Length: 174
Image (cartoon, rainbow, N blue to C red; front, side, top):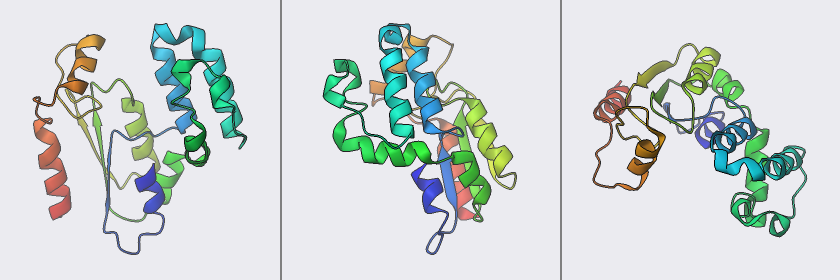
C-alpha cells in the first residue's frame, strides 16, 4: 500500500515491485484474515465494528476492546490505519505510470492470488508473477496444511523462494 501511494508521485522512482500486496481495500483484507481463523469467531463482531468506525474516519476506544484486538487497533496506530483503510490499492495501481512487477505466492494464506490479479487487472502493463509454492513470508511451502505454512513464518533457516530473487533482479536490471 505504501509503495502504491509513493508511486503516485514518482519523482525519484524508476519502478515499483509489489510482493504479496493487497489488491482490495485493507478493511476487506483484515476482515478476511480474521475470519479465516475459527478461533477469532468470538471477536469478529467487535473487530468489524472497529474497522467500520476507522473506515468512517472515527477513532475507537482500543482499551475497551478484547485483549487480542488491542494491538491491532492500538490508539497510536489508528491514524495510520484510517489512512490505509481509505486507500484502494487497485485504483492506485491503475494510476501508476512506472514499470510494475507484481509477485504473489500461490501458498499465501494472508493475501490471496485474487489480490495480485486485481492489481494486474487495474494495471495490465504490469508484469504478474505467481510463485506457486511461495507463502506470505516468501518461503516455499509444500502441501496445503495451514499449520505447516504458519510454521515457516518463524523459521529463519528456511531460504526465500528461489524464483523470487531472480524475478526481482531481472526486473531491476530491465
